[in-house]
Length: 260
Image: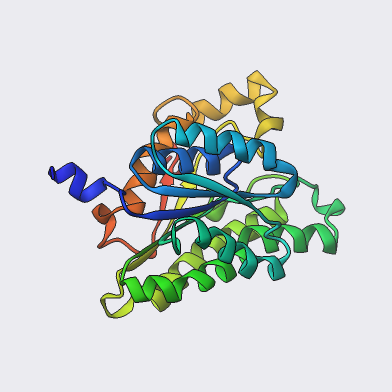
């Protein structure tokens, strides 16, 4: 086995990826498949056609893949989803919490319902889902939890009160997860990726205006917005042995936006 395979290879690992039907979640799931992991894609029932397409794409690589449907905003569904996901290839030892929502409401329009929906999907569900998987990870003495933060984990954007609050919370949640679950050489690491601007369902309103997109690209140091292929390296790194001594971190994948 080469050093690259030893450090970055995911053969024999099982990943569960929420938001796995589209956008960043689907891209991360695909990159985990490319590294050899068996991947279970999870998303809402209405996304099942896209889930099946994602699974077909993964299987074309010659790896194992399947899917489950779940509304993570309904916390009561999470135990059943974990049970179904574990029935395919065994209990997941990699969890990617990529399901998310950004309603982009002006502060005057935010309702208790829209606030609760955003916080539940972006912040609450990742904790309760991870907590369901941690006992098995502790038994294996190996686990990788990857949350999705945001530029808004550390700075404010317009029309984003609930989203910004949730993503700021994700940064602290990731630290708290690490403090609780990375102790005593447990083999579990908990980290987060803070993407810059990638073209996804959540950012589609922005990418509809080329002037806005060009302005966003100029805010980076590199000079362009993100491409889904840019997620490959960091995703596999955080899911593999290569990151065994990194935990509790939010790593920005933003072309240098946060450094300016």
